[in-house]
Length: 296
Image (cartoon, rainbow, N blue to C red):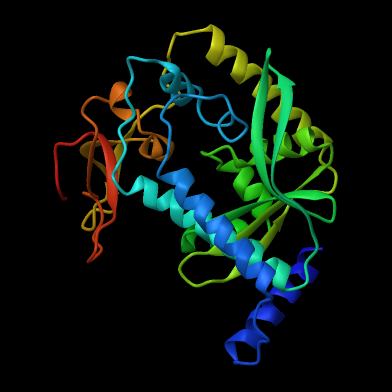
């Protein structure tokens, strides 16, 4: 299915790029306008209150528990709303291109619910194609190539899933009464497309996702105690003269903590600095739990 979908999309976009396209039918243009308007309204009318949703139950427990506490305020950058808006707008483009390419979409942006964990879990899936639920993702180049477009993309995502993409997909499909197809991803820097398929045999992963959701929901709603989910790590580098591994004296946060808006409750001294061990001309920035040295 993935190769057929990609072929249709690529063929449509190649024709448009060569100036051989036939344009979009008026109804698709109107639908696109509505999707963009809904995206803008949704992101600029964001509510901060915590809600148990399918998109969140796969995130770290400490982050979910912070979200429900009235005495915990999430630290967010002013760019957050723009990042979410870009994602929504790319999704609107993706749905429009899929339809224009001749891909049959059986359902889109449909609300679903599932009784689990002693509550009713709600969510909204992106698209249903070939009776499978697909999530549409816009991805940075690194994530796109290493995960969504990789040969073992599904396994790569499952092994490094700080946002809970895998359980989210299975929860959507369980609630919709069908199977999880995977992800349709767009490289937001290059415009490349990829379809990362979930396995055909998915009973074990689906069961794991349902058990995780049930366990996490009950824990979040009944146990207020917050324990750190991750530890920090001593930053090391290889000495050019001796070849030995040495410590900089700094300590780095787990990458997942870097994404969390509540990190300073767990790591009060956390700072975002240029990597002390990097010798690159343009050094990457790193979240440190302890920072005592700028360079080695």
